[in-house]
Image (cartoon, rainbow, N blue to C red; front, side):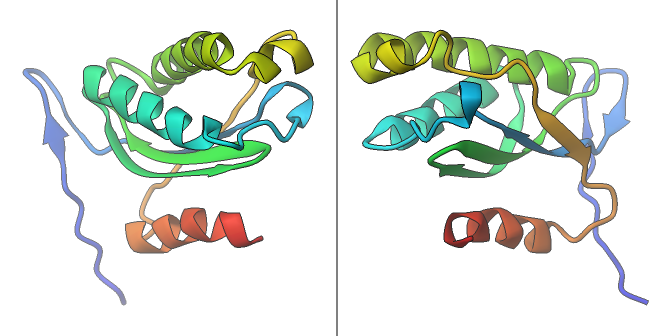
Amino acid sequence: MKKYIVDYKSNKNIVYSCKYHVIWCPKYRRKVLINGVDNHLKNIVKEVCHESLADLLEIEVIADHLHIMVEVDPQFGIHKLIKRIKGRSSRILRKEYKFLRSRLPTLWSNSYFVTTLGGAPLEIIKQYIKDQKNV
């Protein structure tokens, strides 16, 4: 049986390990995360995670969607983090890249996919996310 090492985090009243794999797409799944938008988006996601005290473990941006693996304090919540990332990135990217305003009414679809990572080995999940660009 394989052993897994879990790194727990804590704040003043809880101890936790809440890691999530999250995927979301631009509106209509348009292939607009290209030509510098992808790199700018990665920086925005990193910035929001840092400000929200969430650990961004992995990120991969594909032309029509993105994957992140993130650890979030359960009292803050994954929904609140994704809402902040989507809101800030939409505002900044649509301001900077004119083609995002002309092709889409909003940058992001309303929905997203999220799953907990549970006991899965993190390296396997990280490799899966990295490999998405080659699919």
